Amino acid sequence: MIPFWYAVPSISAILAGGCLFLGSGMRRFHRYMGFTFIFEGLLLMLAGIMRARLSSFYLPIYLLYVAMMLLSPLCYLFAVRSVSNEGGLRGRDGFLLTMPAAVLLVVAMVCGSVPTLDRNLFFSLMYGNFPLPGTVSGGVAVMLSLDNSIFIIALTEQIVIQLFCFLSFRRYVGQLERYYSTTQGKSLGLLAAILSLMALRLLVMVPLGFMPSVTSAMWFKITQSAVYLLFYIALALFVFKIRFTAQELAKSINAQEQRALPPAADDVISARMGTLIEERFFTDPSVTLLDISSRIHINTKYLADYLRYHYNETFMIFVNRLRIEYAATLMEEGKLQLSEISERSGFISPSTFYRNFTKMKGVSPSQYKKTE
Image (cartoon, rainbow, N blue to C red; front, side, top):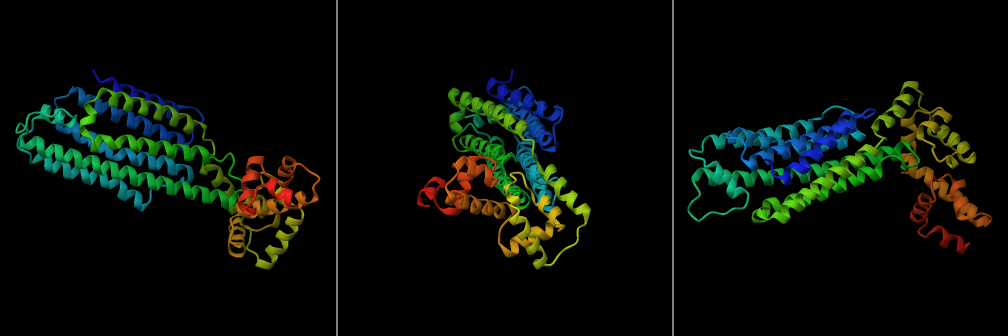
């Protein structure tokens, strides 16, 4: 029987992944993450099988376990990237995919040269049960060294993938700021929570490689099982709630590109933008770059480049600055409450108004109002 500290998280991961992968209305991101859950669930189940010694084909199963362990972080990378990038694989992805295969090939070559291998002794040592000195065979010593090296490689890969996921998240934020006036409802909080959970789980992995004796303690196994169980449940809930991905962003961009609007001189764009500012277009909380470019008959790319070149701002920062300036004018009149000013200025919520006002003015709205 597979130990329960492997069975519980593996079953929960497979069930959570199945719900995401097979659920109706799920998008590419949900399917990628669902596949990742199922993949990790099978990985944990395979680890439990090896721990329970249910198979006599040690070397092939161990090599399969190594390959899955090295590929697992890549699944998370592709899932997170699918939120902001719906394209295919890039050159860097090819390198990441071939790296685990290369490591596995080296392991297979070295293992094939080991003359003797006491499988039971190896597992006993691997899980923290230390025998008397001098009882370790040459084959077991080599395999133990390889196992530690593979774990270090997997841990390093987890850290690198975590960094790539964070950079992908930053690119996603940059794309949103280029085309939208607000990020509210755009899955940023959920994605940040997913990255945080991945980082916390990474911390749980560290003791497995650097404190091998603790793996024999029952309290650690139960704690690890509980952490993994909560990780998959919480992550599945966060993933399920994500409804805004790059698909919506791509639709807006493609819609504008298909119109093939011509470029315009900077003075023409400036005059047309001045008219819109006088009309206070920014008071619409859901205004987008596509809306503005359509009204002034300028391609979104040229309008975004114009804002970056002349104001050194993204569309979101540009619109929020206009909103803050208008809000400050309303405060100087002293006729409205802050909640009304927030709504009339075009902010989607008072919290967004307070955050942006404090960031741009250096003081809170209430403090600013007192000085006027």
